[in-house]
Image 1 (cartoon, rainbow, N blue to C red):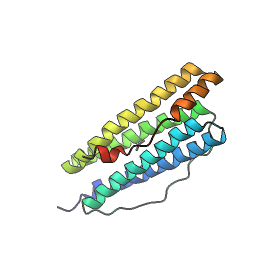
Image 2 (cartoon, helix red, strand yellow):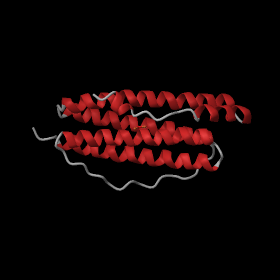
Image 3 (cartoon, rainbow, N blue to C red):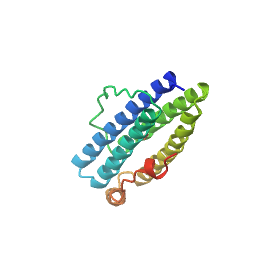
Length: 173
Ligand code: FEO
């Protein structure tokens, strides 16, 4: 059975969104680096790596189904934020948008009765819930901390310990 055109189209859009996310988090990493916040920069760089693996998971899936991967231009990303909290608020809002896009892919697959794709997208649905929770937890800590420099220093140290793990491989569907 030929890979469904509508599903192929939304998945290609999702590849672009995942690469755009990667690009944005890399830009945030550079921003934190210039502010001397190495731990925050590390957290964002790991986030960048994760997003690349998300794009590649969909890429590999399309190829595996005999579909056509269409890599479009990646739109420009911001380079400046008002501060740590502003960057994390944007991260949270962006992840909510990505969740909506994943849900849209899932609904398209359901409507087209493409059950293999629905099944593959389950992984992303769970991943998005986890990503939103992780960013919300950091936002909560930032709200508690406020402008307390020592607490920001400690949080920066904590975020420096984040290590990239390719979860698309560990939990491949
Ligand atoms: Fe791949 Fe953060 O969504």
